[in-house]
Every structure is written in structure tokens, then in C-alpha cells.
Amino acid sequence: MISEYNKEIIIEDKKLNQMKLNILKAEQNNLKTREKTNDEMIESIRKIIIDEEKKNY
Image (tube, rainbow, N blue to C red; front, side, top):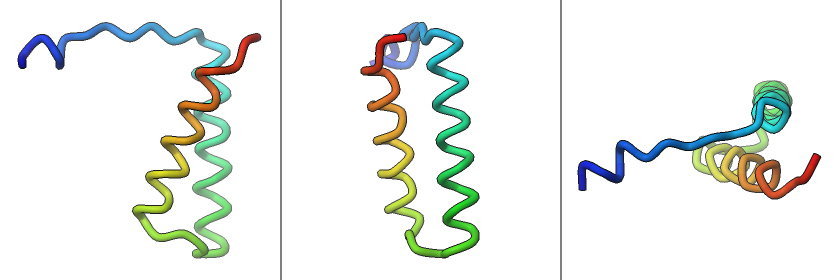
């Protein structure tokens, strides 16, 4: 169980920066519109991370 928390994850800088940018845009948009609930925003952010990780640069 402890080993699950000690896993090292390596993410390319370009992917990480794009994830951050997309998450910030989604957060800013939701602050303006209040379209999504907290749970929906969590799912949206999770989707951004998964989608960005799948991309090849």
C-alpha cells in the first residue's frame, strides 16, 4: 500500500505546460459562466490530463 504513493511519474515539460494552460482556461471559463459543478470540473480536469498525456508532440 505504501508503494502506491511512492510511484514516480515522469511527464514531459511541454505536455505539463499544456495541461496547466488548458486547466486554467477551463477554470476561468467556469468562473465566468458557473456552468459546471465542482464534480463536473474535476471530471473536466481529469479529461484534460488524460487527453494531453495521450498526445504526441
